[in-house]
Image (tube, rainbow, N blue to C red):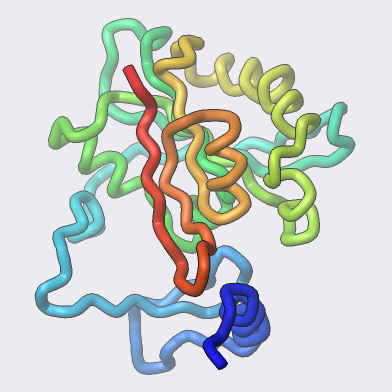
Amino acid sequence: MRPTARCYAEGWRKLLPRAIADPLNPHSWRGGRGHGVSALEMPQAPAQPGWDPLNEAHPAARCLEWRSARLGNHRRVWIYTTGEAVDPQTRPLAILLDGQFWAESMPVWSPLAALTREGRLPPAVYLLIDAIDNQRRGVELPCHRDFWLAVQEELLPLVHGYAPFSDRPDRTVVAGQSFGGLAADVRRSQLAAALWLRAQPVRLLLVAAP
């Protein structure tokens, strides 16, 4: 009998708690759900602009504590700016969900600085939002109305005070993976999300129309 998509998904979920990083691989870190993962790059792997080498000089990110009255919780958020813009009010805003992963497990600061310096990305403001924990992540990221109202009404004005950015929708991106990718798909139409479809995981890339 051929396994169904549900069987594949359940199988992976049962294996994840037992996952460990390769003890002989120096390029290892904690995954988004806290399990160990290791990098494997074959000789003919495609180029990964910005990630190799990871020695680009970059300004430090600012870490703040966001206390949300609407959500009744508090969490860390990171604010990172790249490049130089004539008018900071025109800078695009990129919101990265599961921010603790991109800030600590797989820091994105150096790649963003390198890609901006090379002209592949415009000068921008990046906002990384901590998920707090897996339980809270499972509540807030799957299209939770109050979470996004709190982001819009509480967090964005706070961030704007530290790093001004454009409030135009066409200069705002929300990006995430898994739950975060689904939430980004609903709230913004530009993301890269890993989704389960049939018997195989499929990666979708949706790009906002001009």
